[in-house]
Length: 251
Figure 1: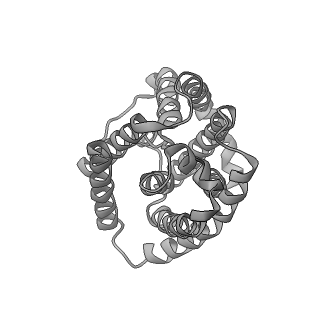
Figure 2: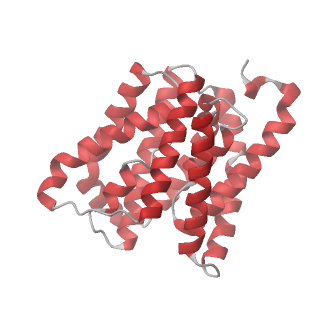
Figure 3: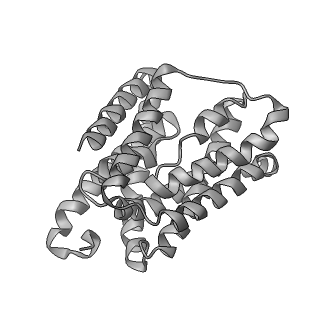
């Protein structure tokens, strides 16, 4: 039974989802990423992964488009990163065709592994450097792998974010490029879910409703960013995501 169409449980999942997106938006407002990771990890405790991914589409798409500013610099980012974006689209399409929409026990395990991998990488502060001559072929490969992970789990930060940080961009350029990659990943995920019948017109409506708490959370996160240590906030978040991922794998 599709939980999103089960009106007998509507109040419970809707209030839970609003709280999740407010929290995920706050995380994104503080550290610049994490909305899909936090949202998928927590929503999957109550909803099937495919339905959680469907709710993610509009909040993720709108907040990531906003993150792509300033528009005057976007052309340079697109010119540099288009091979990676093509890889993301191809990888997500291939994953949607081979795997289908995230569903069943394997989807929970895959999502748990993605959460643990992402949190572990962030906590260890693992970094590597990608020379410019390798970027030409590594970009499409990393994009394709990211697309496959996106199709299977609804999370699109691994391995895209570690790779982007390895390109030694300045902070504003990195934030904008992450917004570009996340926007393309979200659009590709929406197409894959729709192709598998897991993203319908009704899902668009509920996803749009959840944009409001996500934006409110981002605003609160921007306020907190000037008053909290982003480093310690990020560490606490990553420990929480790792524990959540381990619990999903164990179950």
